[in-house]
Image 1 (cartoon, helix red, strand yellow):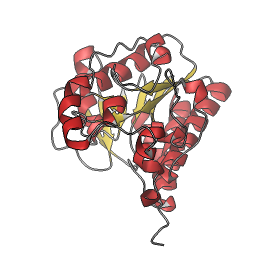
Image 2 (tube, one colour):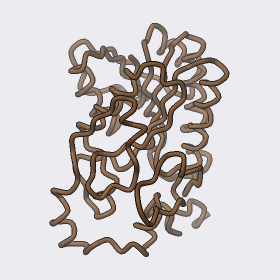
Image 3 (cartoon, helix red, strand yellow):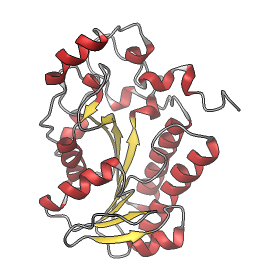
Image 4 (cartoon, rainbow, N blue to C red):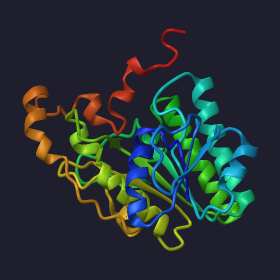
Length: 267
């Protein structure tokens, strides 16, 4: 199984956890990985190089695509790495006969979506409302995944990841946190679910203060084990209780919806 962006934060977590669940890994990044794991193949390549990607995915049972710009940047940088990169990964999988691709989408594909006044937000209730160029690239990622599922029959699972970090560091992340253990569990479920076709699911832990409905993710076999609530007392003591009127807490994308994230503001 190929993991792109293997040197990144989530890639590093998966390289540690997926082999324990029986997956043999081929890890790809634009830089050599400094810490090869036993039995791990390593590939140095750029995901926007289609020929290199066809070679990299050859013989793989699936692809987990994490590579790209991981936050807001210029349109040129984001569109090249994230949109062109996703196209190359999906097209390479098609050409090489790889049946399944798991795409690291993001809550920022729907960032300007208001949080519901009551209940949890389902994927179907969060249509594309990107908050940044980065969010736009994730909308395009999901659209490309849908195209390759419908036109070519690939199984494509898009994970709208919340805040993937060792522990929550803000009060917003008490709702959006995806723990390292649950990162592994979510990706493993997306890889093993029988015939998912095209699926878009939220990617968060079982947080007491969750905003997002995990029914669709659980239908894939995802069973989160962590909850951000043990961190709540310390974070609230420092930052205060979340203000539901504050855009950081009133919108899915949080601070990404603020004017400070305008990539062209200094242009």
